[in-house]
Length: 340
Image (cartoon, rainbow, N blue to C red; front, side, top):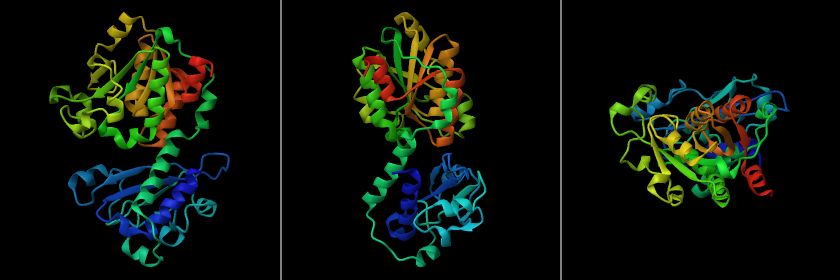
């Protein structure tokens, strides 16, 4: 099922079943359209926040207030939402314009009380809605991104005898981003171990203000603090850790920054680094670039990496394919390692 169809179904659920989303805070939902039918027609971004908390308001950084009118390129979505954003709605929008659905309380992204009065309520269970949201996340995480293919002119397979896999920051703090790619990440780890490729897991954490660096300023103190549940690896990932030496603790974007990772890899005779995990455009990309400039050959996963925004994910893949890394997905990795 395509992203457009999935988003349409979810929008309809939120317009017709607001009673399922009480006390859920609110979310900004963005759609960008392209008039060119050969291109991907939309991307999205979900920003969950609590309208009643100061912290939530601060994180709602795109300028939408919780009372903002819901407009979509001049189209009132209160009247035009229908079963979902289709070609007719897309044609009403200028290329690249963003649809902002601010959803006042109570909702997840959706509906004011006045809007829902105009629609007949339908029966949707919370499980159905959560399942649909999961499908959307998975589709976004694994969708084929043709936009980077023109830059992917170099192809190569990793050498198991000189490679290492770095699984970046698959932690509770990033669970909403990490879980949609969890299966692909687990598959990547299993393939590498089957090929006798060593696996290291990074864990981002801060122990004191002395190690915040620029991250403290940039993210307004919203960091991953050591000793909290947020700093722990996801249970499914934690179960793969063979020993404490397999975990690399870091406090900046790069797995090489302020760690002894390079010394360890050089001592092991490693020449190639395989990267997967989160977030694509921050710690994964920075680690990949850093590895490249330190003299390692880099392989970067397209379907076992993820971030908060599909456009950012694609931008990283374009940049890395152009100048830093060989791209792969799970199928290509299996074929490259085992000739499958």
